[in-house]
Image (cartoon, rainbow, N blue to C red; front, side, top):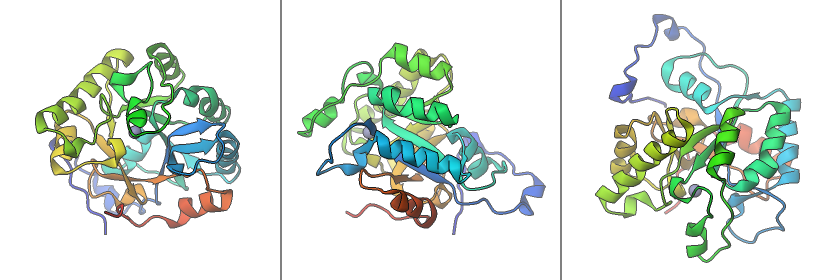
Length: 266
Ligand SMILES: [Zn+2]
């Protein structure tokens, strides 16, 4: 059962007609990280999507008439009573890798699909050093100029902290700073409000969630698997990770069958 707790800045009164409005269809928010040409990774397979598979997945969404909408549209439907029909899909990309620009954007652009990229604001124009510190190969992240250019071409951006820490595991003061500064820094780059936050590693607890709400974000996106409709509130929105190994059949399965909320084990 879904019930939504609205934060103070979201105290919208649902119009009376919404009582009779049809139930929202399940909304799948897909989570990608890197898109490019990779040989099959042994680990962290949800961090990579081969561009050939990505191209086939986007063609699949187009051919079979999925309703690819922006994160803003999905949030308006989920929490503000706006209508949304068909089989809605939202495309999100974590970390802001430069290969988004090289490989994913041309495909998205061809289909006119909206997408949201979550940026680690303290690493813009550098590389994913948190990946290197975990013993894996870091990748180049987009620059300010590239981000501004994509923003002008319709790509949405959200914040993903300043340095990509596990927010529930650092001191409260620093955690709040990571959340708040990522918003301030990104808004300075884009010259527009930033509404969406994505928890690094999907790691959060009630204090982190509240810090995101208090910083003025409208949403918090997790790595809890499920349809977005399974969200308890706007700051704990589930997504569905697309893995390197997902064939089109697996992709279809994730779009249609993985709606119930499933928290990561452990
Ligand atoms: Zn990340």
